[in-house]
Length: 371
Image (tube, rainbow, N blue to C red; front, side, top):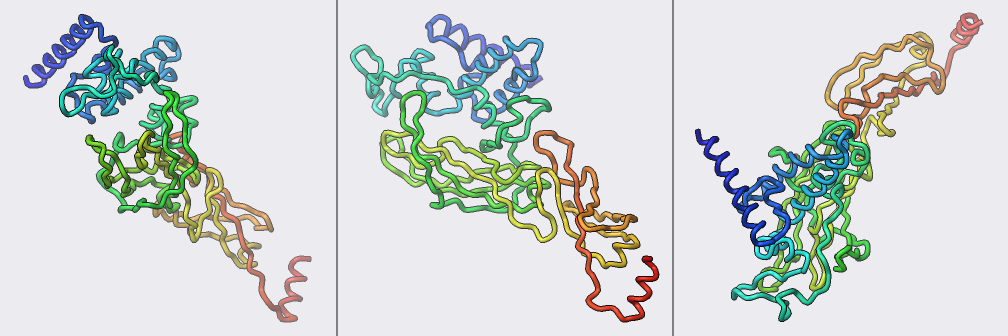
């Protein structure tokens, strides 16, 4: 019964919100686009965006692409506005026109800051929604939420805090005061953005094989409501997806330091792979070198191999192992991040150990055998 009343509440809320905006001329109803009420929480926003973005992604609607593209952009714009506290405050108070005219947020005394006599902010910059696919990529990360995503599936990994969060993690990393910067970024709305901040994220080969959840502690300078600078400590969650490679980037938008007159910089973590004692990562393949005797190379052998996920394989090699020979085990390599369920190969190379000396009798026997 409670779910029935909840359904009625949501319906009434959506209807009332839509009616009020139509009467007031406040433009598009972003809450209605995401099927939410005005007091929706951040978790509600994420759930709604996730559901609708996946539903209307153009790659999932090849037979209705124009309509899907329009819906997809509308959903992204709504999420961009409502997930940003400043934009949401402007929108809640002044509607879409407030965003377009760049209204200032109400101050603590109940008045407004930065208004001209007309009530509009004197700043001439305009509200320009970001690219819908960029927002989608930041939300879902490198792994496609559904197969065959086309362009989105080829993007580097970008993850936001929480969409696919996991309560289990391998431990905390500390990213405090360790970021080199790479020049300022000019935003489309005319505001200067802080210099991009990059930091390496060291991962073991096992983590890249099986996936893991990492927690990174950061400290950054932010400005509070009174304009005072404060030090803010945060924990960022990074879901390392199986099959990620060295160089994969995970971006946390505007998680860098805030400076007067600029937007906070984006914080980027770049995957680095730690050397492994047994395996090497070669594309989607794993490569290992197995030492064997000359006798085994000539007569065949069986090799025990322990995989990165702990399985024990018994690999039979009946062939004569010549220099350059490789034993290939299909689908025992690295997961392929863009193709869930698929893996590369495990390639076994051989290091043949020759005897350091032979007796005259042994030499004679070998010559006789090989001739």
